Every structure is written in C-alpha cells, then in structure tokens.
Image: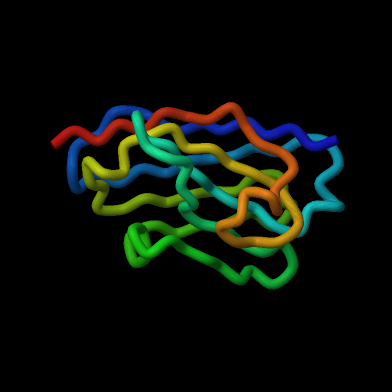
Length: 122
C-alpha cells in the first residue's frame, strides 16, 4: 500500500513563492498519476494540478495555470508543487494524491495524504 505525507505549507504574503512536497512510501509501482487538490474554508474540494507517472504530462486548473508547476523525482518517491505569485485565493489545505488517471476527477485517485496548510495573507 502507498502512504503519502505532505510538507512545505506555511504562512506567506501575496506574491510570494512556496514549494510543497509529497513523500510517498510503500508500493508506488501501481500508481500512474500524481495530483494536488486543495480546499479553502467554506469552499468545495478543488483540483489544482496533476502529472502522469510515465510521460511527465501535466495538467493544471485554469486558476493556477502559469503560476504553479507540478513535478516529480525520477525515483517516484516525491512529487512537488511549485507555487509562484501566490494570491489570497490560493489559501487552503493542500492534499496530494496518487491514482490511476491524472486529471481533476477525484475518483481516479485511491490514496490521499492528510494535507498541509497554505495561508496567503494580503
């Protein structure tokens, strides 16, 4: 089984940059996609970014496209989310996920981390 642990969250100011990490342990061979989702207070669960395991194809929500970059290391032990030009709207709990098909559908992910808090002050 795969276990995911997010890290790198914190309190930053508008316009700052921050990099989140998601460390994976266990059997990652059966996972073909990695993703990041977030949830702001009082709002619905939102897709942020995803990356395929084999071909490094990336997918982004329109709200973060051009500002966020998802990547992974060659050993598939860690997936990253580089966030640039952060806005107050980016505030929320960020969750990493591992699954089968990269994209915005949560049903394609079977393993989830506990999340890391990102707070962007205006």
